[in-house]
Every structure is written in structure tokens, then in C-alpha cells.
Amino acid sequence: MKAYKTDSVLTEEQIKKLESVRIEYQKIIKSFTKNQIKEILDRFTVNFTYESNAIEGNSLTLKDVTLILGENVVPKNKDLREIYETRNTREAHELLFKNKVKINLKDIINIHSILVKDTGVQLGFKKLPNYLVMGNLKTTPPEKVEEEMNKLISWYKFNKNEIHPLKLASEFHARFESIHPFDDGNGRTGRILLNTILLEQNYPPLIIKKTTRIAYFSSLEAFDKGYKDKLERFLLNKIKDTFEKFFKVYVRYL
Image (cartoon, rainbow, N blue to C red; front, side, top):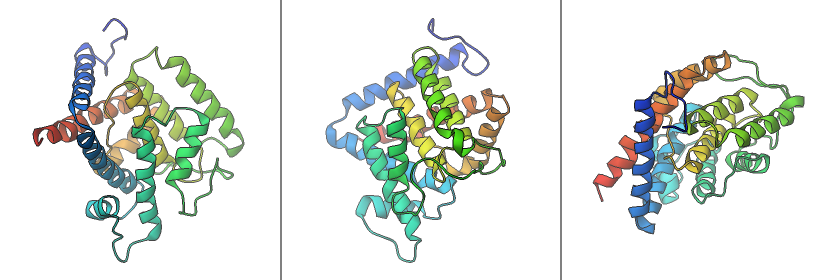
């Protein structure tokens, strides 16, 4: 409590709740066997992949994603690109949960390359301008992307032990999406990086559901206009929701 300043989002009560979530999550993970950890992370990957891809318009159902990732079965009459996007997310998550993803330029480019493999998306930083979905917000011009990404990473390293992890994750995510460094796959890459930051700080990863898509994009748009609290509050709720409705529910059935 002494380490962080309170405000309208991170009140004393909310900081305590987040600390309880962090501690309980760590206890759960440490109490599991290797097989139990693998099972819960596999289930998380299926749910995260379905929701994250659906936010971007992927039409595969949760059952489709479960068949692809859980049984290596390819549903009939489905878009190959959507199937590759699904398989690719599992590969990215394997690195994430092995603690092999760091917030640096090399790993960010690598995660993006994995996520868009075999989908026809240009690798590396964008060469043409692009825009954020829902909001038509201008993003960083291609010629300034590397400079802005280096600034963002420097900001992260400077602040990672100075500000509350929720604020750290929230601002990094918003600024990354504002830069929109890649031709495509920015949202999916950004949500993997968001969970990278949370896991580094010993918090559980979160899932942003497609049903909250409008609220999610609205929060990013508000951040771009200088109103940071909306995205912070949104992510705060997602951390607590994911922990309560996914991790804690899973424990009840062990």
C-alpha cells in the first residue's frame, strides 16, 4: 500500500483486492501438479484464443477452436487463415507461459511473426499507414514506428518498478495499439503483451471477451484522448473477472 498512490480507479480497496488476486493466483499455481498446470493453461489458451481472435472478426466458434487446439482436428468449410490464426496463438502462448516472452523489440517482433505465420500478413513493421478499428484514430506513420516502439520500451523499463502493474499494463497496451506497428495482427499481439506484463508482475493473465469489444475499443479511444482511467477500470475488471470465473472455477473441480 505504501508503494503506490491511490486514485479514483486504484483506491485502497481496489489495490487490496488486486493484491489478494495476485497472492491467491500464485498459491493456486504453486499447489498444482505439472499436469494440472498444463491442463488449466491449455484451457486458458483455448478461451483466450477464441475471444481474442473473435474481437478481430475471426468467425470460428469456441467448439471449432477447441477441436483445432485440443484434438488437432480441422473443422470443414472454414477459412484457412482463421485456422492458422488459431494454431499460431497456441504457439505464442507456449512461449508466454514458459516465460520466454519479454518486453523488448526482438520478442515483440517475434510474437507478431508467430501470430501471423502462414496468413499472408507482412512480417516486420508496417510499410504503409493503418488505422485503429472502430474509431478511425490515426496511428504512428511507418517511418516513425521503430523510434516510437523504442521509446515505449524505454518507458516500460523505466516505470516497471515505479508504478502499479495495472497502470503499467494499461498504458503500455494503449500506447502500443496507438502506434499500431504492424500491418495486421496488432490487437492480438497487443493482448499477448498485456498478459506478458501481468505475468511478469505475478498477476493472472486476463481474457477480453468479444462481448465487451465495444467497451474495449471505447476505452482505447478514450485513452488516446487523454482519459486513462476508463481503460484502467476496464482492465481492472477483466483481471478480477478472469480470475474469479476461470481460475477459481477450475479449482472447484479438482
